[in-house]
Amino acid sequence: MPTKIISWNVNGLRSILSKGLVDYLNSAQADVVCLQEIKARAEQVEEAFPGYHVYWNSAERPGYSGTLTLTRERPIATSVGIGAPDHDREGRVLTVEFEKWYIVNVYTPNSQRELTRLAYRTREWTPAFLSFLRGLQNHKPVIVCGDMNVAHQAVDLARPKDNAFNAGFTAEERGAFANFLDLGLVDSFRKLNPDGGHYTWWSYQSHARIRNIGWRIDYVCICKSLVGELNEAFIEPHVMGSDHCPVGVVLGDGK
Image (cartoon, rainbow, N blue to C red; front, top):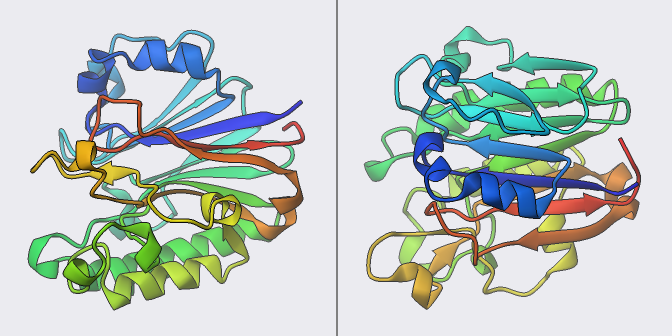
């Protein structure tokens, strides 16, 4: 059976629950859902997500960051973080293991205005995260889903010239993402959709979403060994509730 995986930065789980998240999940019928920037702890959320096993990695800081993964099938194992205390306090990585592959839910640190966190993001976080992924790849294929906070190429944002030195499109961030792909991972959407104009995040300012002045910074990346099973790679800009929209894939074989 095909496996459908969806990833979405919801920019606040409690907020998006009031904006139709459960209805969206019921209509999407995904096997695995990876949510980022949940900004909540389990005890703050009454919703049980019917039909799913629910796994949390909340940040230590209240109302900040965090990841949540929903799975139809119970995983073989789950883990939170990357095994590095200096990086794991923000709840940015949550991994579920199935028989055939690992699915890693990640919310990559933003470099922030004035690039105040660029050095941390590219010189500290990225090497640690890549090391974690290499360890997983020693055992089975990896699927990485999440908000990577970078537009990899000029085709991935509406105004590349205007943003060459801004967070999310600096040479350092783009180089870090290239190193990520060099692990043997494939940008699933770009693999099937070479053209531009497809974005996953829009500023709330200046009616950017209506005008489609956006960035593609949310990805599902799969190991090269899984490319032959890639049936669909999609972006759902019509789905509202966050400044990001859902992205996903359908892979041909089962778990």
